[in-house]
View 1 (cartoon, helix red, strand yellow):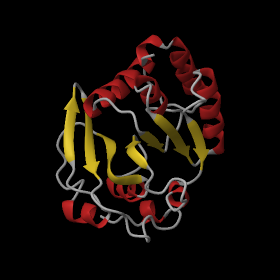
View 2: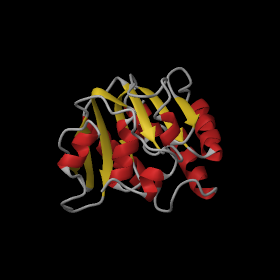
View 3: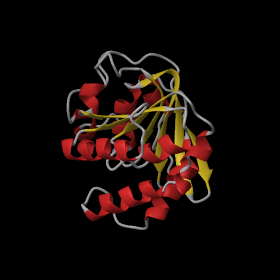
View 4: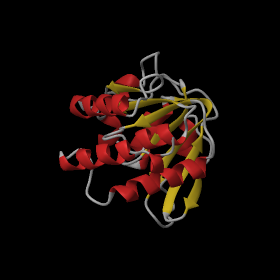
Length: 207
């Protein structure tokens, strides 16, 4: 099944927008953006984490685009996670997808999730420093963190030296149609101190 052939997904996202779990704008734009993301990253069949999943964009869409992946949809809001669990059932993804209610800073120190994912994606989780700090805790060495980016070049958003502190190699930027993403390869294990306690990565970013 692909996102474009899943009317149930469109209905779910429309309802999510109606109840305030998804921002305004045509559902087709969300689907197109996530589909471009899947194309930019290429075929994938490993463990996937959607960091700050919200209403399941892009996690649910990528789960349908990559039928062999094992998605975990992580969000701090119990209301959103209840919605994600409902959506997983509606899309018949229970055999491989789960939704987890936890703050990223806490889950990142949980042995069940720490450095267990081949790919972590983040759309709208926060500024680059907070996303990299929290995301690094979940990516296994040899895996990737990919972040949705605003259009246009923005030098300094992903400083190489600070990324090295989190185990990442240099960021590479990919443009697919009108969508832009960065890909951060994880080259080594993350130090135990990362991520810092709840709220700290956003309140006192590393850069």
